[in-house]
Length: 288
Image (cartoon, rainbow, N blue to C red; front, side, top):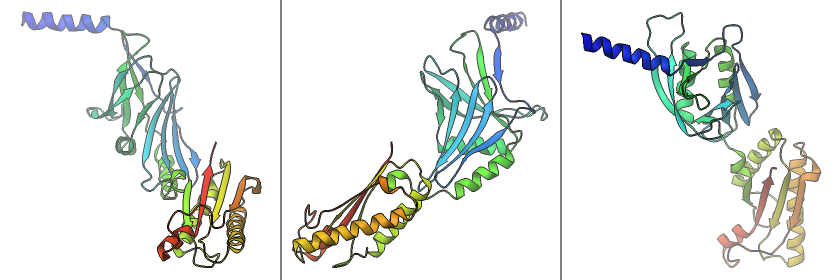
């Protein structure tokens, strides 16, 4: 019993020597969740942590519409460390224990980030009324530890709006349509069925992305029909694509069209398959 008491006293003295836990969390009056991005390209749900920074959940247009969590710190880490993440019950649920969720790397001069699986886990805990909380050693005061909590107060309505936004995201990203090769029917300015579908996807994306800097449209033909005729055909094809894009509201000054005719074949012109590959349009889209 004497040994146990001595050990307990030593632990208490050690704990007091290492300072305190500094906690950052919004209270009932300051806890807000805001859907700051709501489009078919991106959904972003923000939560301010007073005197610390901001918690951000984000989903972008893509096949899987994965989530990304970002802990935006006003003062970024000075060194590498690991933050423990736990689901902490609110104070009005006495007796419930915190549940470990995951860990997050803290990298020098970078904000904290977590991937899809852990992001969904955090959102589910917030929906249950718990407060996902990060714990780590303070890099400015080695005697202190830091706790950064996400409050579940005023969360559910904003979360529902975020889920609806995510459901409406396009199932493809800028990277998916930035470089596209489409093909034409023989002796025609009409695209193949698959290429028409692809062009519609590009058009839908361009309606929403206002950061597009330039769209380059390059068209090519096979070697049948005569060089001059094929060059004019390729020019008409390029102009038809450009007109379609302009009708979507894209500034004409961002469009660059070139009809190359029979130049730059990508396959042998002696076969039906090869000629089909040579009858193509290449669309390249650039952003700043």
